[in-house]
Length: 329
Image 1 (cartoon, one colour):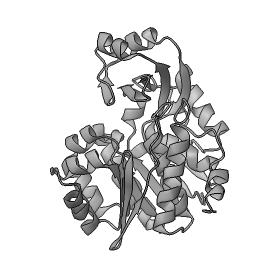
Image 2 (tube, helix red, strand yellow):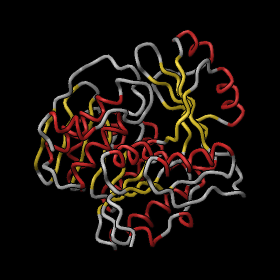
Image 3 (cartoon, helix red, strand yellow):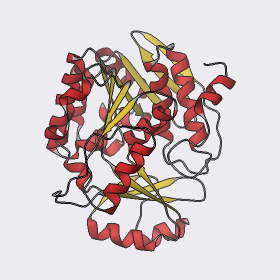
Image 4 (cartoon, helix red, strand yellow):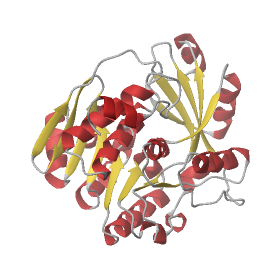
């Protein structure tokens, strides 16, 4: 039996992070502050234009899983990479960080390993330009059913819904986790994902997921309303645990009729890359270890605050020490 505390499934993406002035973004036709999907030729142009590069194994849920691993939980990440230089770098990096990466790089993958060029502005905002290479081709055949036996939590990445194969992989994984007696959840990932996959996401929230994380824009987009409270009410009516981050405003957590608001200390970020991913890591650490809902939210806020204080999407400080300083562990 695997006995993983948390298993993540998502797009295995090498994050390539660089600083950039707003004038550079305008010149290159990069829309600030959002994730744009790009083709391979565009990815090569942007990569060549980066003035400084920090490369790390990334992807939204992979970053969350890495954060959970740093907190001492037993973790695995299911993703797909090609057997190329970036793919081997990715697999090795995940394993060295203590997260099992059960799928070996695929020699016959049609597309190269996925990569995201992330440009960080002076105000800390990040503009993501993602080439969905091999990672986006993950399908049900890439999800080993035996991995779920004895495991506790499955966490899914909304970004992977851009292809039908990803949808079938998610449904199969959620059903395998339920059969194993565990719980499943998803991050909505981006307002554009919520808009593109509204019907599928609404079905997952209602029928397959035990918890769902999203920000205010994602929730209002998903339920086609400008009223955040109304959107969250619809979600909480069909899903046991609903979490909404609201930038600098308090995080809203809802569970079985309980509503908790956790304040956020507003700071100017050095790099907002990974803030949502590490909020999820902090929250899921509390969730997986049976903490009260408010404590789960506080852990998420602390983890997000740590990661926006430096370049890169994964924690550099010891999150357990930060939690302990606030009396949470």
